[in-house]
Length: 275
Image (cartoon, rainbow, N blue to C red; front, side):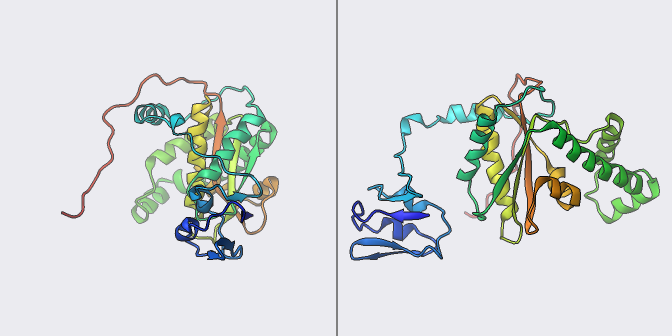
């Protein structure tokens, strides 16, 4: 819960001005908070010059701008980041995993009730992978293997990519769908809250970048979000509540392959609109 220390508060009103939920008010030169309206965005804590507002009794700490990365350092970090699909079998220390996942809370969000489920038990990861392989096998036999069905669906749904057929064939040949990282983090929450899936992906990207800085590789697992979320056995194994859905999943582990080069020449198409 966010609380204001009346002894430290000077009544400047900065927190009231920045509060987009309109749950803060000045009264008698002190701040009052309507916690029923508060979304816990913590903007008020970050803006208070007197450090009079805190979260669950933990006092805020001023920024140390000397520790901020330079544009050149960020350029190196962003361009060094690559999706890792081959992991070493080495176990990642749980304290480090919790540290990485913890940075998800600092991402932009619209759902403040997301939670993370961490799995580093290889038996559980193999169970989840087998459940996914069952889906892959059925989908391939029904949709991709019969040429007539595949071509018909492609006409109806242009998004159906022939590359998916090749990927499924390779997965069926090797016997597993995912490259079984030492750990997987699932972000779960109530999908009915607007922008929940986007919020989950923002949280995962925070984890990706921090993991990169700590020497841990990562790989987004989109199929878990799409298929395992609908699988009763997988949901039970992960302990999901009825209202909860898998909004994103991320594999974490020590990379088995080292990338050496930054890719030059890739650009994002930009359109200017206006004078």
